[in-house]
Length: 176
Image (cartoon, rainbow, N blue to C red; front, side):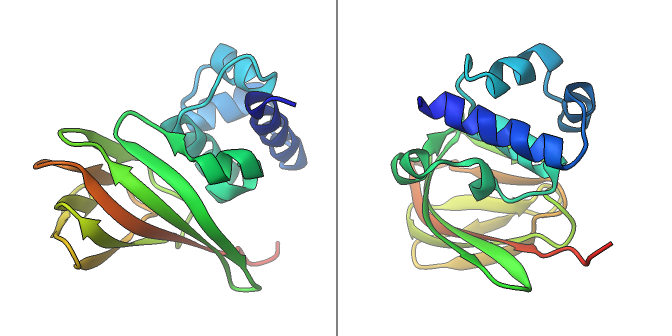
């Protein structure tokens, strides 16, 4: 099965488990219904931004929709290329570890992730501007930062490519 089909199948499975219609997920994620339909049937390749919008609307970590081949090769958006290095899950949270490249002169604005999500970065090379849109951090080589990811946040490489390690921690929601 092709990668786009695997990702699409997983999105559809999670949407169905959540009891959401295609129209409702399109509305919540702000992804067009036609685009979402093409993604679910594997006729369209998703970008990193699209997958984050969908997984946020589904209340699930990004890694929940990534097949192993994509996780190893990585997934790109306009500004960021991310490779899933590790996924750790326990009763308290799901934590994802990514090796990322933020492309020079690009900006990624990410919508809020599910409640309680937080991100951490360790910059390996370059200088990144990251964190909450209203109060971004500037982090240089060897530096680290932390921010709430349940609010809009950004990734920016104003002065050249940035290589970094990012963790995203999603607390496990309490049972209904």
